[in-house]
Image 1 (cartoon, rainbow, N blue to C red):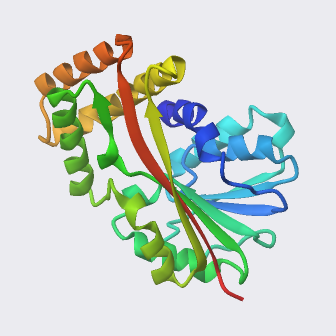
Image 2 (cartoon, rainbow, N blue to C red):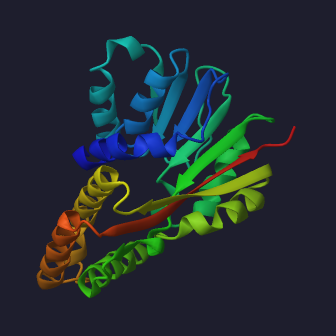
Length: 259
């Protein structure tokens, strides 16, 4: 939970650089987790209300605790504890649109979640989705150890029913669900010696991201402690290398429910 909150501190400026929610009164976040995205948007848009849907009571409790730290957003957020892919949620006020951030990568049937979201969205409203493309991750100088550990992590995510490259098929998922006016755009990180501070921040963030999956991946038998230690050592070398390069892309898409 702490990682999800600190992760958003690093990534929010990239995620919302191209998303404009001005004019929206009530957004729904599907898979709101610990409320990190809600905190960002409620501060960026002072008139906005957000309802977060999540099936985990533990995540919702953490989200409520986080949001209660900011009195200025009081009364502008609500939570629904449900599986968004199975139910048709009831909202306290009319909905203008919905968004998902880093959710579909963990969902065994993303098409079902997209279809159910389409059902309850009002005609004419939009859905915004931000998703991963984890196989795009590369570094220079190349590291066999980093690649090996990262591939173990992605194999374990697939074993759990997720899709570490789901960003590549966002347009397909939007179209299958019935959305129109679909727009898809990748966001590219290409950080080299011309942007040393941003590169260092992203490499440090990525090291923490890799570590966050260690214990589960290890316990499931998908990697070894030796592979992790080698990958960690090479990542720390990269952070200090003035010639290092970090490369990664995530994907954003939006679509509209036809009138």
